[in-house]
Image 1: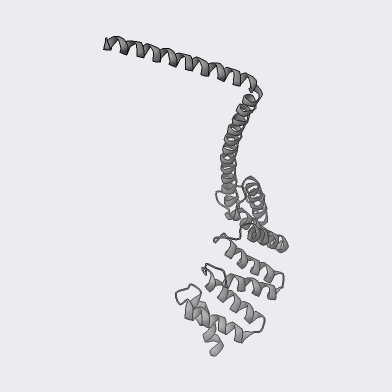
Image 2: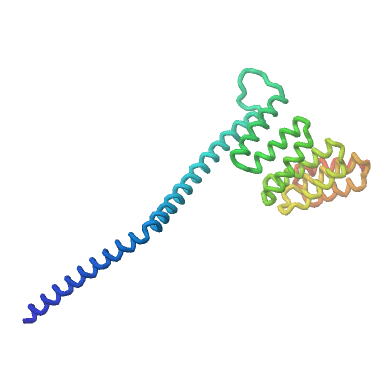
Length: 233
């Protein structure tokens, strides 16, 4: 008797479950039919999003690899490495390097490319173009600690080439106050030499004194000591 009751309960449960499943499938089919457009649009959106993300990932890798190749070729041109037998002039070398760095920057925006574009212009005597690209570097990559401080140094040199010594001093002062402090000794020695050229020897000696006092191990310290000794003798 207990076994019989148990069997009837199992059968009833199985029948109830089948009815519920069929009912759910029927309701789902009806819902899908009523909302076919919604399902199709939703599926299409998901597929489009996946394709877009995959496309962006592939393009990003392609652009990175392309930029790397272009930068490598640009560095070779800039430094005159692995040149073929034909002799090219310094001007031709920097023009070629500038073109390659421009293409690398178009493929991927990096402060390194901008910095070397500016350097090429500097070496070609196009100081306004050099300054323009260095200012662009500082605006677009203000937190880059590798090239931003170097850009201020190069801006000072370009300004000096143009005969604008006051502007050059301002750039060197900005370098001196840069947050990392990594190039303070460079800014001090260059500021001192520039002040000497401008006839402001006392101010120059203060720069040299500060350099020797605060950065005795700097590669510029010996030059600063020599300039101080020369002034005293």
